[in-house]
Amino acid sequence: MAFICAVIYNFVCSTYFFDESHIADGAAVNFSARTNILYCAVYFIAGGLIFLYRKELAEFAAKCKVIAGATLLIAAVAYFALGGNTLTVLFFCVAALIYTLGCKGGVLVNPVAKFLGGICFEIYLCHMVIYRVLEKLHLVHLFGNGLLAYLFTAVVVVCGSIVFSVCAKWFLNKIETFLKDKVNNRRVNHV
Image (cartoon, rainbow, N blue to C red; front, side, top):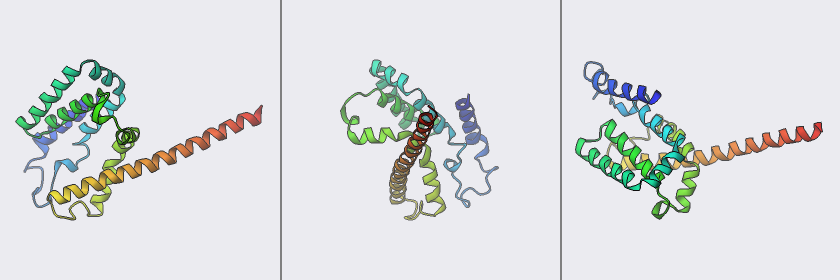
């Protein structure tokens, strides 16, 4: 239900609210729909649903590789033929994730992919916060609005998300171990 609401909100924003009559001189205020977290919620919710049902989707993609591959091909063609609007980007990303979940060997099975897969949900949860920190520090457009600025921002967000995720996972594991030891010691003392 949340996903459907996010799609509806995204559609209403793009067709009604994000126009000249609702945005006071969008060029002057440097308006971009991609900076609205509710507008982009459709991507976050889709990613969360894929994570939630990853085992079932992996089984489907492994059993039906031709269907998953054909869907990914159709999504890529749709993206380039129809343009990069929200639905084509979402369709391509979902199809690529589902196809990737079904891959059992090849390029995607390596120690780096395994490490990143172990912290992927943490990266997913914190990457937008890392981007917002860069944005508030005025580092997003440090090199202008061109390719260099994009590459710099992408690399810093990915690296910052990985570092934050590793640290957060280590810290939470320490807390979990501490709490388990405390509960186990309490049980031993009461016996």
